[in-house]
Image (cartoon, rainbow, N blue to C red; front, side, top):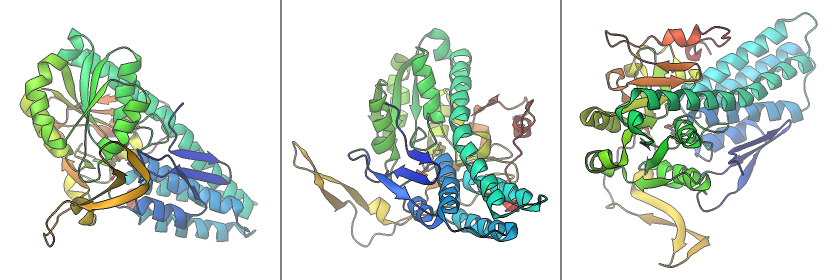
Length: 392
Ligand code: MRU
C-alpha cells in the first residue's frame, strides 16, 4: 500500500498527523485555511512541498463548501487575504509562497475575465490547486529518475555496482504529495536494482529521520539503517568503502539563485563531511523550491523554533518490552534552565553542492563553479515561471 500523507477529494481534505508517527497512523480533517495554518505551524504536516499543497487544498475545500458571493472581485479578495495568511505559517520553505503567488495570479486572471462571477473565480482556484497535487507526484518521480541515473553514471561507487546513499530529514511521501524528492531518488535507485543500502540520519531535534524516513523505508522494505547525526562522519570514514557509499542526497526548503540551499538543520555539516570524504553531495528539489528572487543564502529567513523541541522528547511509553500507545509521555533530556538555540534549517553554500536534481534534469556548476538555475525554467515546453515569493 502506498503511503499517503495527503488525502483529497473535492471538498474534503485529510492529512496524516505526523506528530503521531511512526507509532500511530491517524488522519486529521482539514476544513479551512485556519485549520491548515495550525496544522503547518504545529508540524502535523511538514516538508516544503506538502506544506504548500496542504495550504492550497485547504483553501480549495473552504471555497467549495462555503456560501459563496456571486461577485467575482469579492471571491478574489477573499482568496488573496487567505493566501497572505497561510504564507505566515512557516517562513523558510519557499514552496508555500510560490504556490500562493501562482494561485493569486490564477484568481486575479479569472476575476478579470468577461462575465466572471464568484463561481468561475472559485473554480479557477480549485482547479489550479488540484493540479498542484497532481504535478507534485509526477515531478517527484522525474526527480527520482534523473537523480538515480546521475548517481549511477557520475560516482565512483555507481560505476562499481549498486550504491549506498545517506539521506537527512524526511523528504519522502510524507513531505510531498507522494514518492518524495531525495527519498524519491533512493526509491528510484532501489526499484532499478541500483541501491545497496540506504542510511538515514536521526535528524535532531525533531527526529524526522528516525520517526518518518525510517518509517517510510521500513514500509517500502528498502534495506536501510538509522544513524544519529553525529555518526555520519564515522559512517563515511569507516564503512564508506565496504558499503559503496556514493554520496549524500538531501531535500531543500529554498534554493537561492546562486545554488545556496536552505534545508533541515544538520544539512550543512553533512555537506562538509561529503567534501572531506570525496563523496557527492546532492540536493533534490522540484523547481517550485528554486527561488531566483533570493540571490543567495544570506537572504533566506531561517525559522527558529521553541527550545523545548531540543530539551524534551515525546513518545509512547515503553516498559522495556512493549510499547503502550495509549500513554504518550514527554521526557526532559536537558538541564533545567539551560539556554537553547533551535534553528530549524541551515544554509549549505553552493560550493559544497555537486548537483541540484530537479524534475527537468540535474544541474551542475560550470567550470567557474557557478550554477545556472535560470536554465531550469527555460526547459522546452515549460510553463513554470520562477518563484514569485517577493510578488505576493
Ligand atoms: O521542518 P520540516 O520537517 O518541514 O523540514 C523539512 C525539510 O527540511 C525537508 O528536507 C525539505 O522540506 C524538503 S521535503 C521534500
